[in-house]
Length: 321
Image (cartoon, rainbow, N blue to C red; front, side):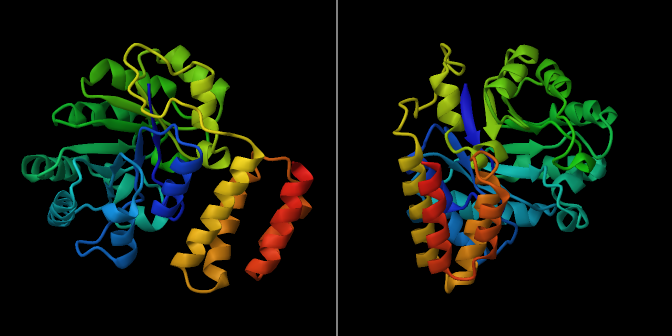
């Protein structure tokens, strides 16, 4: 079983990926948040530059519905030494969908098929795809699978929800099982794998699953990959996970992870507010997995300087250790 870390805009940047690998690991492939501009913006470029990335296996994700933009970005990534790119057909953001990109591109399968025809013919790199099940109905999924079957997809990562579900509702494991029945390309499951129980449910319904992508669950609980590994749920004869040796875990690890993120963000950003925004966003996830009362989380969110923030967090960690 392979384990991937999902691309999450503004969160799983190279700073986060490097720190995560250093203190937790257990990830086979890290996917970058999407790049969307033919001339990569400074933020996009910084995130994909090989010199900035300390993890071994990275796949950049591209968000566009224009073949020339896709191919131009792919060419740049090829020159950087990458050996795969991922097409984003899963983002449900309203601003993305309004431009018929991400999951919004699924609404016009005829145009999407023309797009795939061109990029698979001309791309210098293999292309994997991260997709949703359709716009608002599971009836769309079988048509999408018939289309996907026509192309040499390196791997299809299935977020088992429709666009209109967003991140709500229950992912359809039956839809993923249908993909396993119809497609011959490698498949990866994505959607609400947050603990041992949710993983076992997936395997019970889809026992042939060879890869899972962790997103919000792994951000909330950075130990999740190691928990799955330690529980021997991911061991099989074909296991290619190169990070099976569990790293030191516990509160000390989290403190080191937190402090490294804080320091790296301070080096990269100018002023307290952008750094505070990053750290507060992460606490909305971390608080889901830690015994933190609402008053303590509110204090973190109200902090207006890094000194105040650090004092609050230090007290919080001490009280929970």
